Image (cartoon, rainbow over all chains, first blue to last red; front, side, top):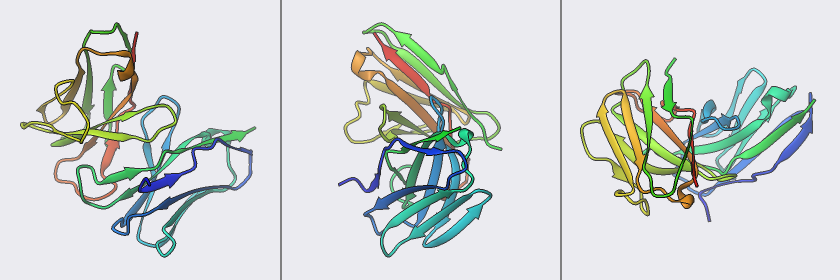
Length: 112
Length: 118
């Protein structure tokens, strides 16, 4: 079992809808949780990160972590076609090389 | 903000040839850079850690003689895919950690290099 599980999609929603992207993880040592956005044929860019459990909001984006259930979520409000991308969740344990464990990424399509 | 440049963004080569990909930190010094490989609809897989002035550290299963890494300065790391074969076709991405930085959010990723081996 991979340490970070993520449904690859694709997930297609109409413009303006609320998007919910989710991941589960298995390693209790993970402390930081990140969401990266990756446009087609581009490298990932850090969108949001949270420490431990709780919510973090940044504009239309809200990241949520529930450590009791090992569940990570990203919500996008008022979704726009420009939000169409692959969203990768990642967990950081501080150990290893880069310390990151990535999910497979969910391909999101916002239909105009 | 921190910017990492990767070059070339796309390369096509014949089987058996070698290809070099560059990763540069443009506005900061990076003692550590990382190289990843990403197959279609798959996650980023860490290949190796590039350390300035010393040998790279390779992840299990990655052939160090095939994927040569050189980190000659604080702003440049190169990945050379030697004797490339079609199965090496992939998206190669680098990331860089600012010198002295620690934590979860201090990696900056390059835009990636798509390698196609014919």
